[in-house]
Image (cartoon, rainbow, N blue to C red; front, side, top):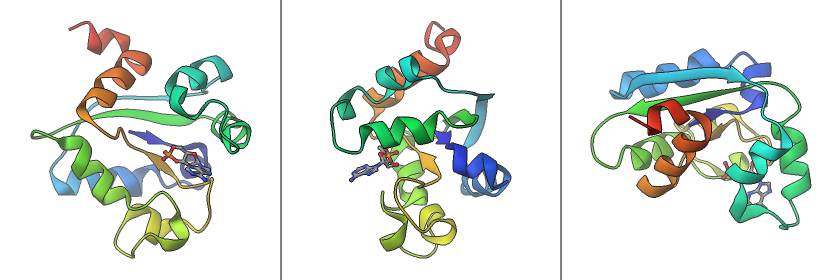
Length: 133
Ligand code: CMP
């Protein structure tokens, strides 16, 4: 998962990680880093060319993001996404990260892999040393 630049700028990384840890997931890797356009085009390959893509890349590259790997039971990606809430914070239910802490797209605080396959692919992009294990 990624705490996006808005989450880092607003000092919400601790609050977000607290929710995942209290749920029972384990932090196994983390790095605060500036995501550049090339890296983002690989990460967001399925969004390249969409109307919101340029705005998304400008947002995701404007300041550092906190990239993390969380470990848990089978289908941990689904647990992460349920805690995150819906893509649009404006309609994400209270109790979720986006519902409690966000208001508008594109600044929706967090990214979570949407399948086990995506998680494997994204760990390969952000933490190649873990993917090689
Ligand atoms: P996420 O689901 O993590 O990955 C794609 C991101 O693009 C999404 O979060 C939002 O931050 C951003 N985005 C902006 N507009 C849209 C849109 N109309 N549909 C989907 N994602 C959008």
